[in-house]
Image (cartoon, rainbow, N blue to C red):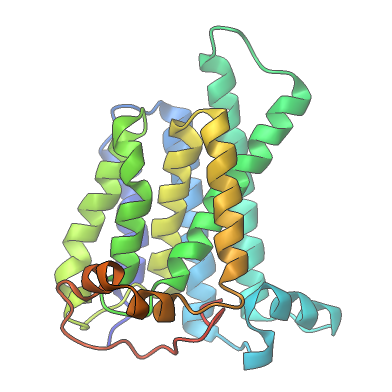
Length: 256
């Protein structure tokens, strides 16, 4: 099974931010989107090409424990890279939002909260979608569903970009010939998170960020694959179009 789908997804989506022009985004938002997607994709390459994380060092607690023991794992490097690129992207989104506001820039404290929330949205979405890359097409479907509410917001063209990318690689992914890997799944999630950060009002972003944190923490103890198998509708969505098994394990926290 090839991992080339991941770099193709990440590079294609980054290129599209400049070539397509994203009709509802100014230059700042296009740049911030490229940083979010490109940064998450590059961070994912580290794990795809040189993963050295032992089983006991998986998940957030595992990586933090490894750092306390003086060990720097590829997983912890990936987390740092995604967090940094998400924070840079979020600061640009916040600046663009301030410029567009008819009420003028928000107070410094409120802007800091906005940046923190948007960082969580981008980084949390990148990690969450990666957790779903365990079966053919699952990460693509999860990302498409995550960004779907943004189709009715100013971030609609970002949703169209993700759906277009998913459709382009979908046949090979569903047939289990290719897989997104950390590179592609992180990039897809970062794009979905960026759409929420740039397209949703503050109250909705706060709720969404809280939900993302909760889901990422729950994944430390709960296997999403097990939840999907036990619920008929989720199982049918998951199995739609599949033609083969994934090679990853199904345990909780096994995708970091």
